[in-house]
Image (cartoon, rainbow, N blue to C red; front, top):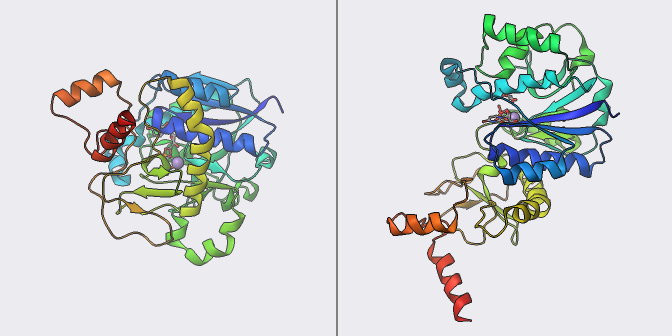
Length: 338
Ligand code: UDP
Ligand code: GLC
Ligand code: MN
């Protein structure tokens, strides 16, 4: 067991939050395997410290970028070139077998049985089921395979500009060779299944073991009010399945935010949990896609120090929608007056 691990990747703080929630969810479901996070040098000290509390190993790796704008444009995800960094996971040769999980996945029950599978096991991609989705896969670390994968990148590139294109090119017989390498969809239930096949989702979604918040809008792109348990986001962003999204936010706000706050010290800290929302955001409570619109998208921003905030204020760049909103200022004044 000590030579098997779950592995994830985060090149910056947004995905690092996802990784923290994923790690916590694996721990809560009592995995007996090690937890490893590969991170980029850009991940802040605060996030690195919290990751170290959740994961057995946190390894800083070089960020690899495909730089393939043409293919990434087709997916409307220019940010995914850096998913080439995922290929580093084959260098973890201290382990005999691993399960890679995207930082935007959440474990809903123990999934240690995945280690009974062989390389390369994965679930079908919901967009093209003869390809596997590379958000969850079983692999065997090997420097030889790592070298061959890099060579494959050089010679053939990636048909989607990201790791999934390379991996499907390399493990090209996945669709036909061995059905035991097809993971059931419940090990990588992507939220888009709700829109593409709702009856199946209603029939089988309750058995989901891993939910994958695939797509541009991630759980941490929304904001959350822990008191009312309401999630708010930009209206045109089709919400991922709201109950799963709520699971993510419940775990993040209860178990991860306190650790982030502790590591962050006294500086202002933006967790994504809001008390005051000074814009017309739409609560996401049902399976319907909300209609109204929000003028300011919910964003994860690098927290500013109070000195930086003061400077911005003096330069006339107050954050009227966020920290410097009327409600926040009024509540601060109220506190002083009391
Ligand atoms: N990732 C990362 N930084 C980035 C983009 C992606 O660390 O800027 C990692 C992260 O683990 C993420 C995975 O690569 O979960 C794949 O990207 P994403 O989940 O956004 O792709 P999707 O599943 O939405 O296609
Ligand atoms: C996908 C996968 C993701 C991968 C990306 C780029 O949709 O969900 O894990 O990184 O494509 O290839
Ligand atoms: Mn993903």
